[in-house]
Every structure is written in C-alpha cells, then in structure tokens.
Image (tube, rainbow, N blue to C red):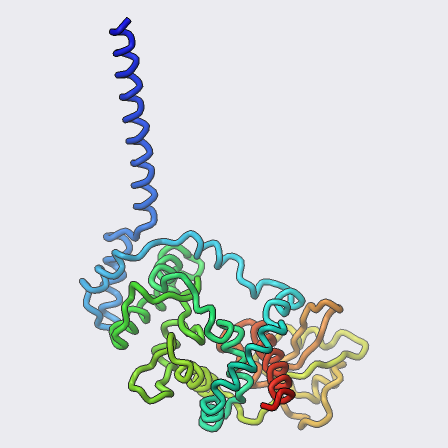
Length: 342
C-alpha cells in the first residue's frame, strides 16, 4: 500500500515538473519573440546607422538590445483615427471641453503665442489647435516607449518598415545630440513625442529653443512646443494672412469629380472650379488655386476648398481630416477666446 502511494506521488511530482518546464519554455519563447534578433536585425541596422549618422555601433547594439516588440503598436497602426469618416473623426476633437481647454492654454501662454505669430506668421489659434488635437494641450503625450514603437514598426511592420527604420536612426541621433535617455522617452504608437508630437526627424530638423534656455525641449517646455509648431508650419510654406479653407456648394453636373480626385495640393484656379460647377467665394482673385475636398458629414456630403495654408497643415499630418479638425478647432477656440475677453 505504501509502495503504491509512493509510486503515485513520484509520477505526480515528475508530471508537475514537466508541466512547469513546459510553461517556462513557453514564457521564454514569448520573451524571445518580443526581442529583436541580434544577428539578423540589430547588427545590420547598426552598421547602416553608423554609416549614415556616425553613431557608435556598440552604442546602437546596446540600446536596441533593450527594445521590445509591442503587439499593441502593431494593432494600433492598423486602425488609425484617420480611417474614419469625417462625421466620426470630428466628434473626437470638436468637443466643448477641448475648446475651453484651448482658451485656457491660449490665455496662459498668450505672450509666447503672440511672439510665435510675429516671428513665423502662423495665427495663434492654429498653433493652439494643433497642440490641442495632438495632445490635448500637453496632457496626453503618450505612454509607449518611443524606442519600442519605432523598433516594432521598423522591424516588424513591412508595409512601412523603411520609414520607421529611418525614424529609428533619427531617434538614435536625436538622443545623442540632445543628451536624452533613449530608454525613458515615451510617445505615441507611431513614435511621435512631446507636447506637439514630433516624430524624430521633425524633432531634429524643426524643433527650436523658444524659451532661450539652450535646450530644445518638446517634452516639458510649452514655449519650445509653441515655437516649434510655428516654425514647422512656416518652413513648410505657411502664407501669413492667407486663407485656409472655405465650405462651398455645387451646381448641377459632375465636372467637379475629376478635380476632386487630384489631391490636396492646390491645383485648380477658382475660375475653373466655377466653370466646373462649384459656387466659389466671390471675394478672392479668380486665379487663386484650391483643391476640392469632399467630407462625409452627419448631414451628408460636404464640399470644401482647401488653399495653400490648408495643405501646409497636412504636412504635419497628411490627412485632410486632420487638417480640417485643426482648422475648425482653431476657429472655435478663437471665437470662444474673443467671447471671454481674450
């Protein structure tokens, strides 16, 4: 009897050890899958980054050995907000709370916004609206490590892998030149960071020190964020005093359809748009160029003319929905700002 019990216990104990071993092997396997491969991914990339930017190879390998593949990042990039219809996208950003917080942000940083507008020609409400759309005026800067986001999309998202590997190189150069900790900087699932959500190449090329403390700090300095947004739009061709967009109606006919398919770069003179059946604004010169934009709104299709400055906003985010959200939020914030004694 005792021998039988002893035998049963030995069998149970061995099976338990086998089960634990299997469980641990699964855990290790999952961990390995979430790490970058040294020989096939990290080392070839390090050689290339060293060749392009001169970053120390061993430094790159050490940093990337800490990177982790994030399945949530891969899921998020498959369903961006910009894939929504305008009627749904608009609801995200055109809220009373976001408008009121925009007014608060404007009043709090009025002097800096005025200075940015004077220097770069970008209206204060546009700067406020971009920061409002991007991070709710700095409140939501992202919780994902930028290193993990860029490594995940660069090495494990073939559709846009080249772009994100390029951004990863810029990130590594950025942390070296700005003396940042690559393991602690957090941002969006696409690797954008700071109050204005600059991607690494934009941070390197367009961020400015607007509070004159000797540091370009887009994570903590509202002044640097405000100045950098204005600088970015200015360097992409913002026309001071220029129009942005106008809502229009259509006459009968379908001649406008081929014009609408030509993209966001202003390409057609107002006189030709009028001949194609668009009721264009009468206060502008007939040779002013515009793009025709169609939005799927809650009350049916809307038609808008987007001018040069509208296109410049799309250089920040290439979606016409994004640019329209910035434009309309800017208008709403400005109206509320003026109504409350701004």
